[in-house]
Length: 261
Ligand SMILES: C[S@@+](CC[C@H](N)C(=O)[O-])C[C@H]1O[C@@H](n2cnc3c(N)ncnc32)[C@H](O)[C@@H]1O
Image (cartoon, rainbow, N blue to C red; front, side):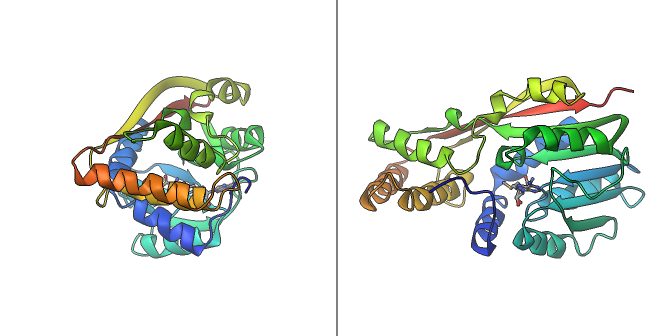
C-alpha cells in the first residue's frame, strides 16, 4: 500500500467526524487566533476539507469580507459546499494547491492546515501560496510531524509499527518540523513557529478515539501486517481506556508567514 493523497466519500466522512471533535475545534481556533483574520479581509482556505475552516473564517471576516475555499477532492467539496451554504461570503471550488485557480496578489491572508503533507511538489504549492498573497499578506501553514505521536500501549513495539505504517499515508509525514527552509525558498518570511499539541485521556468521541479507528483500518490494509495485529493493537487501547489509562499525544507546528512588501 502506497501513499494516499485522494479522499473518497467514506474517507471524507471519516475526516468530517474527526473534525467535529473538541480537539479539532481547538486546533482551528488556535490557527485563527494566530492568523487574526480581520473584518473585510479576503482569505483563501487551501485544502478546505469538509468546510469547518471556511465557515469559521467567514464569521471572522464578517459579511464585509470574503473566503475562497479550494480542495482537490470532490467528496470534500460536496461536504464543504453543504456546510457553507448559509454563508454568502464563501465560495467553494475544485482546485489544486499546486495550480490555484485564483488571481495573483488577491488575498490578505491564507490558511493551509494539514494539506501540504499530501503534496509531492511542495515547492510548486509554496510558490502558488506566495503568488496569491498580496504584498504584506500573511498565511498560516500548519503541519504535523508524525514522529510526535505517543500512545500509552501495552506493546510499545507493535504500537510503533502501526504508527510507522500510518506515516506512509502521505508523502511528507514529517513536514511539520521541516518547513522553514522551503517556505523561505518560496520568498516568504517565517514570522513565527508555534507548536500545537493534542493530548487526550479518553477515546469516546475524541480525536484520539477517531485516530485509533483510522490507524487500525489503515494498518489492516497495509502489506506489513496480518489482520490480527492491528486488531489486537486497537483492542489493547480500548482495554486501557476502560481502565482510565488512555494517553494520546500528537504535536503539529504552525508557521505564520508573510509576503514581503
Ligand atoms: C486532512 S484534510 C484538512 C482539511 C482542512 N484544511 C482542515 O484542517 O479542516 C486535507 C485536505 O487537503 C486536500 N488536499 C490534498 N491534496 C491537495 C491538493 N494537492 N490540492 C488541494 N487540496 C488538497 C484533501 O482533499 C483534504 O480535503
